Amino acid sequence: MNNLKPLSVLLIGLILTGCKQTELSELQEEILNKKINTVGFIPNPPEIEEFKRYNYKSSGLKSPFRNSISELKTEKRTLTEIKPDLEREKTELEEYPLGQYTMMGSIMSGSDNQLQAIMDNGMGKVFIVSVGDYIGKNNGIILEITDTYIKLEEIIPNGSYRWVKRPATISMIIKN
Image (cartoon, rainbow, N blue to C red; front, top):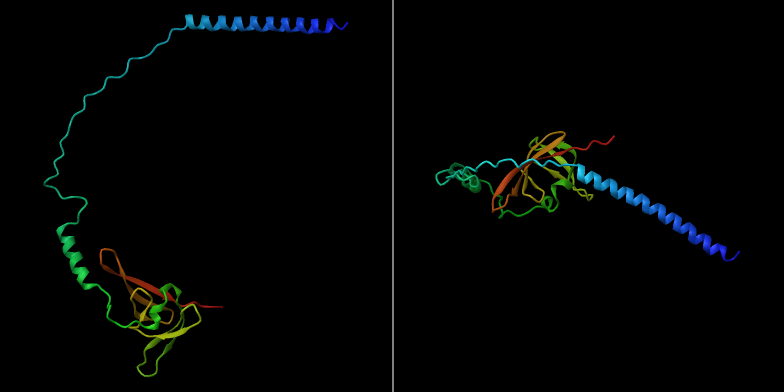
């Protein structure tokens, strides 16, 4: 009985191997038939049109990368007109950035009946400002004060040693 076990395992292995080979040979035969009977068609490539050259002559035209003469004249005029007063002594209002300030309210001054604003610098320090006062780190000057906002103008650098005026507004914060 002990001799039959290895013999039966061997016999089953041979039978399975034989089945596998017949399946493979049938598959290979089918592939070979498909190769023989199939005719492929490859179309001819399209004709390539001849490239027509074009000579672009830009020697007499304006460069798209440079400003025109009239723009350069305007820039020079603007360059000389807009610049901050660098000789002026800075005030305490100019020690903090403009975005840090909030308007707390407004008051009417007694002597010249001019509206003034009460400002908080965001660090607990309160200031009373008037039209013409400088505020913020970018040479901001107060142009108008109303009951609800302050309109001012900053002079900021715009690269190439040029200065540009930028309007700004500080609105009053109303707490309920």
